[in-house]
Image 1 (cartoon, rainbow, N blue to C red):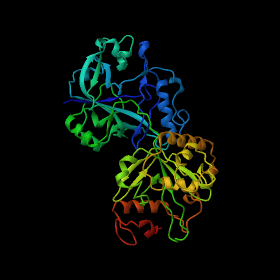
Image 2 (cartoon, helix red, strand yellow):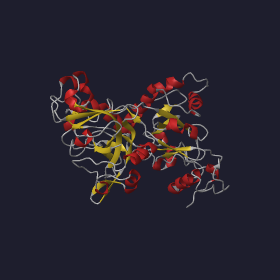
Image 3 (cartoon, rainbow, N blue to C red):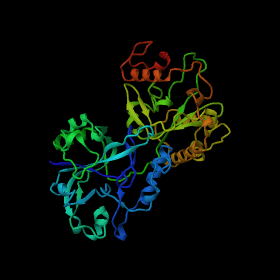
Image 4 (tube, rainbow, N blue to C red):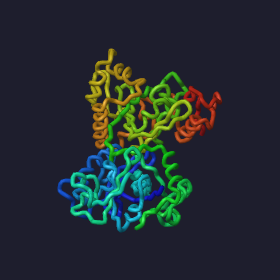
Length: 468
């Protein structure tokens, strides 16, 4: 077996931009470089076709594609060199130049794709160098021999005319495609981006000095392809036959109860908004945050509904979450693009007992629930629900919340976690970072509950007193 590592995607040299990624969850967009040649009129590809995916991705993190992510308006109307084409499982190259190494490869060999991606977090200045796709070769053909009805399957056959030396790699379905999530492999060291040492060791090395991947005329080969492929398969990342899968707008509503005024020890610490975390205390561990639901919860957006004297209000809608299973419950984490939730009294209204709501499709969804009041209907519907909202309701939640967020001012957001509650708990958690770390230690079995000393204490939220 042979395996080669090929850099693809828009970057500062080709397009003057880097596609976005959320490295903690591995979500990313595949954006090709601009096309420098003319294309056949019947099979043109352009950035305009990508704009809906780009804008939707930005909106999921409450960012603007142009002002926040810096998408260059100058290339909006340009054609794209869509290569590789993950939908058609093809990759083209110049068989006499850079592609000459690939031209000598055979069926079953690997072409591995990576890209330099821009992290969504503005505080992170370095690029995320990550694997984004893998092809197991089925066959390699000359682009000039591809019949007209198949020209639209690759960027090199879309060209009018294609070069006589161009080749097209066709990949094996089921063993090839775009990664469902990117795998970060790089770091900046010795004045260049390079593959991290531990990953180089796991791969068995590359045919370049010290894992250099910033840019080169000759893509590097894997020195031990079988060892690399074994590593790749252990990452357990699905390969999908799409360039950019559309979001399903999957939203699950999280029913947050009010503070218990009768309990002097209750702090209502979770969710830990400041750290983008929910569930590490074991709350909802018997339903939504049960480990059996972890796989289904992965990639969903959590809509936190806080009940109170003004009805149920949507204090926060997260970006897509990543889920971590602990001993007897799981934890959802998300990128903190919105640092704190809305204040309870300033948050958009889901439903009150008069039936008022800023989310009409949600009201229709709960109206048939057999309870006497609107808030009781809401509680009955969502108190122990695990499944996402219907797609139409989810889209309404996302659109309404996004519009509300854009119109909000600084005073609408909570300064402390207790301001997202309808009234403060009897005891305020003043050591949030310590509290979060403690609950993580207990959840992962590294530390027992300080009161009963058990590592799987179901009452840890009541036993726990935050260390100072």
